[in-house]
Image (cartoon, rainbow, N blue to C red):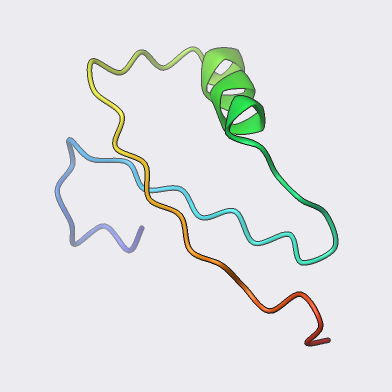
Length: 52
């Protein structure tokens, strides 16, 4: 984040064009970070993997 947003909200973008990521991968990273969240909102969008 650019520091201008809400300090109580973390936003993560997964942008690996070569590999599919599963929600379980995201939760693994969260658990490894040690940060505890009361609420997690999830939104997904489809990307064109053929673009290089």
